[in-house]
Image (cartoon, rainbow, N blue to C red; front, side, top):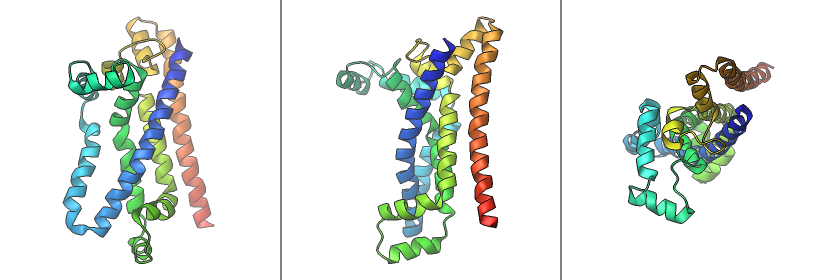
Length: 229
């Protein structure tokens, strides 16, 4: 049961992280380049960034409940998705992916916005004067210049998805092999006073977190050593 939940959690975190990076990179680049190229519209870009950050301050159970209602059969949107996919998104792995992407979105966007914004504006101005499009500036200037931020965004999004509880519980429930992740399994083990199993599950989660953080800081240390050299 622990390994079943383990591989399901890894699958969920991997799929979610891939979707998050694919969406967060262009959005973050749009926010940074938009502020640089259109200073008068800075308020609009700030509003979009605030909306993308909303899941950080919204309680996970509240977000999970809203998604459960939206994706369930009580709404036209939920019924349309169910008709399109052949099954409702609520209480399914696909629904967990949707909820995880929304809940972990700020953890992918914020590091990328900070990394892209740290690139000297002179380089952005030079690329613009040379005729580079925003897409080309993103691929050839922002992403290569913010590799550490890209790694940080990926790791944070992955770990945040691994440790999800409230959204997963509200939107996916506790279905073995489909929606039962490590965090849900740990909750069940503690609730059943199976502390020996809970210790093993906690050890797995702790190991994943330590390895991911070690990856971030080892990359940062190597980059710092190369810069000093």
